[in-house]
Structure formats: C-alpha cells, structure tokens
Length: 284
Image (cartoon, rainbow, N blue to C red):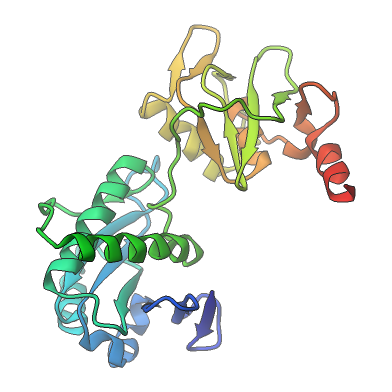
C-alpha cells in the first residue's frame, strides 16, 4: 500500500494505492475539498464516502455512501448542501482501467451499504437504499475484487464501517484459547488473523467503571443495544463471537473497566499470560 500525503501531514489530504490494483483512493478533509476536487481522478466515475462524528454515541462514525458518473460535480453539489448536517471528510474511489461505469459504481455503492448495515458499527446517513443493478458475471467478478481492496484501504483512512463487530461462530476449535482473569466471569478469547475474538457464550460484566475509555464504553453500549450482550441477571451473556481490535479492548469491554489485556488473558492449557505466550511464539 502506498500513501501519498498531498499537504505533508498525516491528517490532511492523501492518496492511497495498492500495487497492481487499478483502483485509486483520494481522501480529504472537507475544508480542503476545493483544492482536491480539481484533481484528474474526479473527472471519472466512482464511489465516495462522506464521514462525520455520529449523532448517536453508540456508533463510531456517521457515513454517507454515494456514487457518481462524474465525481467532481456530484461531490461539489453534495458538499454544498451539508450546512445543516455537515460532514468532516470524504474519500473517493476511482480507477485507471475504465472498469468503473454507471452500472458498476452503483454495484459498489449497493455492496458498501449492505456491508455498513450488516456490521452495525456506523450511523448511516443515506435515506434511500438503492437496488442491486444488473451487471454481467465478469463485471461482478471484477467489482468484488475491487471491493476487497477498498475494504483494505478504508480502515487505514479512518473509515470503520467495513469492519465487523461480530463474526459468524467459528466451526474449527481454535488451537490456543485464553481465559479472562476474573473470579466472577467465564470469558474466553482466541486470536485469528490479527483479530481478538471473544467467544460466543462468554460472560461480560454488567457494571462499568469511570476508568474505562470512552471508545470502549461506546463499544459496550453498542453491543448491548444490538443484542450481542444479553442481560442474564448477574452478568451479560455474549451471544456471538465478537471481534475486538486489540487484546486490551477485549478485556476492557468485557470487564467494564480499564484492563491491561496482555496480562489479563491466561492461556487455558499453558497457564501463562497472553504476553508471555507471544514472547514464546516470537522466540520459536
């Protein structure tokens, strides 16, 4: 992945490209839109996502997902109408091989909206859900590949709606299982492809303390509202395998307080902390 900082700052406008991928992403804060929209990429068809802080604090962000045959005109028009409910930034995706056209950008828009609704991590500003357009089997194959690369880039640019909070229950039993160090809770976790997954049937504390970070408290609230954490009188039962971005997020959200994850999870059979387990793995 190649990031080019257009103004020399990590928070400012930037482009993102993946080697051998025909797509291109351009990210910009809204205040830089006038300068950025003159770029050649915005002459082309593409999809775009506008982002702001959520209006409901159970979400991580608020997004609007759109498409256009000419990105520049659509984005100028859209941004000019944002005075009542403004967005802070946007990202636009286009390509250099002319894979994107009127039909295929609508396909990408449709798939991104489905992804956002299924993941339930972001507030969706779209009032209308477009229908799936008819495209050829070859176009569908190309667009699914294009979408896969978009899902790699979006989180790196700060867009979280493509990242799931919960995942289907794993069929295979994980090799290394960790138990949360707690006298009150029976809570288990395993690691898969860099994600920290608390298992279905685990328990979470019903109380939360002032020490817990705001972002982790927001995740707790979201999981409760979505029925992933279900009230069982003395604790919450976790009804789905649930993904966390870090080992400390997994322990802090389930305990309801700030918790150092590397020493809060104990290997079920080796009886060592997650931190010690990782050290041994690195030596091996």
